Length: 240
Image 1: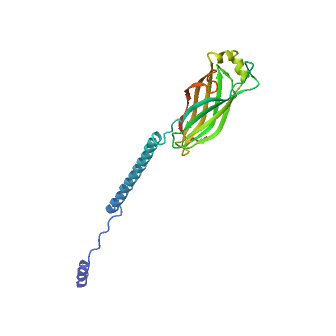
Image 2 (image 1 turned 90 degrees about the horizontal axis):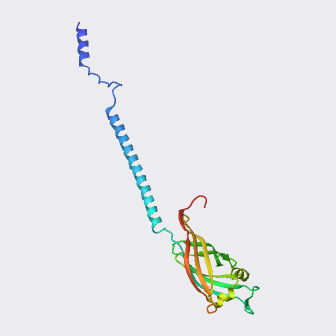
Image 3 (image 1 turned 90 degrees about the vertical axis):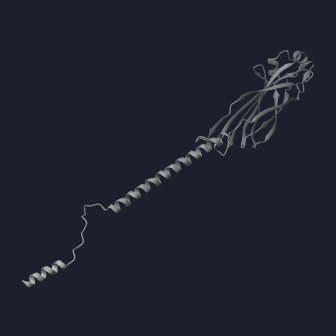
């Protein structure tokens, strides 16, 4: 009996074992930690997307502003300065010598106002009486005009006296009287290119109306008008 009581007292004096949490109860600290990490990752993602969107918008706005201001390409300027005969019409016994053509010199200038090179593909000058071409085409090719520069050119063309007489049978009477009206047309084709991105195709044409008389045969009077300008701005495409 005493042994039984002693064993009971010994069992009562032993410390209780710690309570073990149930496995099906969530760890509250771990839950809050995972939640915080998720919120931080979402915040970083939103900030990153916002930064990329803002940077893209800034680049787009800058590109548009520059294309409308600094990188806006303008038309080159074509000016005809003089038209004169290097070799005038040859007269024999009061008639035009059809075995010898007249040579006309046209002095022009091209001004490039752009901050980029202006590459001229060709420059063409023609002379007309009415709708008939009375001169063979004079073509000058492959001219490069630096930025903000002006280049002068001298173009020479021959007037076909046979075609001129066919178009104007009373040539001698008109030269000695009211004068002969001719039209010269100077045409320039080329392209302005900036940074291989901005391009502007250029097509310039200036028509000059000249009057030849016996008093001003070598240096006829003339008046010019810009009749054709067809440039276009565009970005570089894959086909260019």
